[in-house]
Image (cartoon, rainbow, N blue to C red; front, top):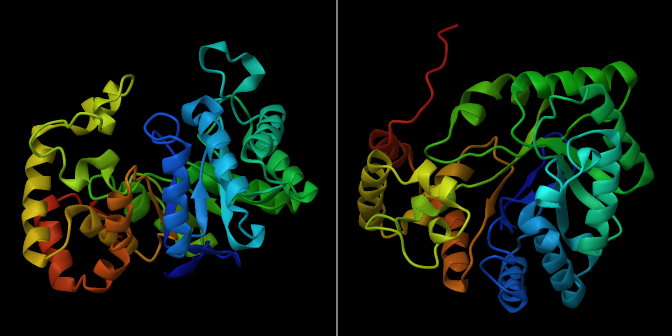
Amino acid sequence: MEYRRLGRSGLQVSVLSFGSWVSFSKQINDKVADELMGIAYDHGVNFFDNAEIYALGESEKMMGRVIKKKKWDRTSFTVSSKAFWGWRGKDNKPNQTGCSRKHLIEACNEALQRLQVDYLDLYFCHRPDKNTPIEETVWAMNHLIQQGKVLYWGTSEWSGVEIMEAHRVAQQYRLIGPTMEQPQYNLFERDKMENEYLQIFKNVGMGTTIWSPLAAGLLTGKYNEGIPKGSRFALEGFDWLKERWVMDDKIKKVKKLSDLAAKSGVSTASLSIAWCIKNPNVSTAILGATKKAQLLDNLKALEVSEKLTADMMDKIEAIMKTKPTLPDF
């Protein structure tokens, strides 16, 4: 396994990590979660991602049960939570969502209980909160770090302007600013990582824990001929995800990418993940496999990335045609 520093921090995270969005509680049970987390850990994965909203808190409870059962040395792995949407769904009351001091602190305490750990290695503001001053959010996160409940805090899907404002506030008051951002990044979604955040990488050295490297499974190629039963796009309540990704133009590109992968002797999934981690600004790519075979194949991305020559990257680009257009100045 390869390890990369999370931004300019001293924390090292495995370039491939394991997450629980959609899968935990909805697609897999404790037994499968135990097996998959064990395989990941045994292959050098040291970061496990979660959030309060995933399965309305049940995902964190499941991961917590696995962590307790595994009895891993707590210093050998990192675990995260994210706060914004709350975990009560339609029953959320006004202060049970957002990035206010009250919600961030209470959500952290709840996550610690669900995950059965004494501290969170990483804690994210899951989305920007337009109703809370960024100054309040930065103070709250700094407070949690001072308490020892959180080691590093970050953002998810924040704009470059919002991230830099958080750094400005932290610098002004001599607080701890965000260490990392969790953006979506894959062969279809590239603007933030390859355009909007470029100056942030250069100026503050932001780490990234990218999500959906396989575009919710589209880049595995399994949707090339339709939607398989039991797959993510077939789940009740995830029609929005299917509508976002299952488009003829995208499927055509994935089919061509699958042909290229087959000619290279690798899977479409491992090629797609390898392409993501080829970007040096990616600290870690979060895997969301639900089966042993899927996870083992995903983990091969590390080997595949070493074989991605400039010529191969050009061939992928020629198929996808999704590279952001950067300004000339």
